[in-house]
Length: 489
Image (cartoon, rainbow, N blue to C red; front, side, top):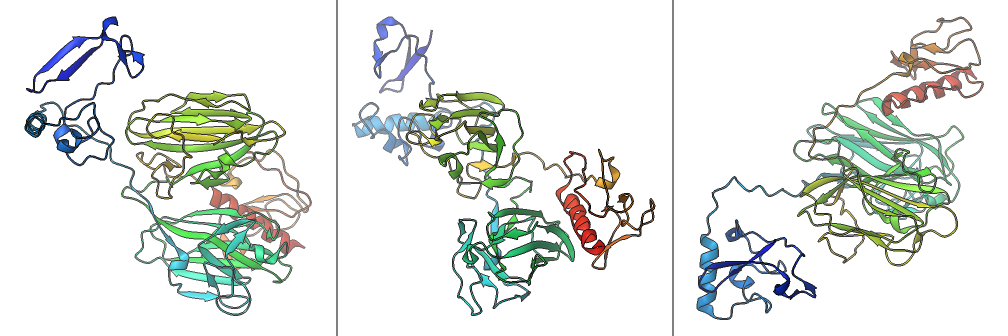
């Protein structure tokens, strides 16, 4: 049976067995309840015992509240002295460190090495506006506003020096600024040391913001951002780089960034399809928004629990699933109920996190209160979970693990499922050439040659294997395809 111990005023300890005669404790019988008895080990180094965390010293602890206060100064001093002299001869007690913050530098806070713009000067933290300096509006793309970023007009090139810096990643939200209405059509490019690392599709004034993430090798010396027209002229081509920033990794580096991967998959509730990872969210504001019909929203990554005390709750219309470390801890199929976990009593540190919220049809989102909430103390004081942008609560990957180097697979080294071509056969690692097989030449686009890629002439979309490949390699292939279509017309 569980035992309870009491420190007497003369620093002696008496233990008794909890049984039916022990009576009530906080409104419930003590017998059979069990205890999570706090240890006195290491107590001299802090003051967390029997108080709410606001006492600076043990002497203060023993003057808080009525249950554990000691009014007599001499008795209190004796008790403090006793607690402070308790020695511990076991292994070192390791307290987990809080997550190391990753730092970010906004491009609008840096000085560019050069800049050209198609209409007036480039603008920092506003849209491009008109032809005068500082005449832009708050950056807004597809209804989403960004306090930081760059406002430009096609054709635009902005260059930054990376020499001596330790940045490992560039990210931004891109698109035609809302100040043009539904007008405008642009293409965004990111270049590293003269090599294109990213190219967007054609983005138009009616499109939502597109998320860009480009890894920066340690050898990179120059970053160049390019916005061009889509081949239909530069009218209303107001491009904005929302929240454009460079990441400096914490000591040890790694691929983890603050926030959770977010995506949507079809179905109510889809538990099997992988998160498509269309964006990264730190605020988790999506959990409180309406959900499209027959759709499941997916949030994946890691959550930080500092002390092992944490609980979760949902009141989402329609369904909810939450997995922690691969274990289903919260499940609800009713649109109008609130379902909560108890204290999960996790080990302090990072834990794998997967949340799925869905809607069948009709109304969706929060039924009453918060659709998804947590209590960092393991109770029922529900608050909305949100990361402050530094990785204090959520990270996309486990920061404690070593990063896995990305691998590249070239499409020209794979066997396609099927293909059609407008002139001859598709060519691998050469241009389309003429009608004969392998009659192409080295792939060359704008004077830049490529050893790997595909050459083809468009008649209808080619079908390529449904395989995940390195993003940069895929983008390069798409660029090659687009360029050949242009040359072949």
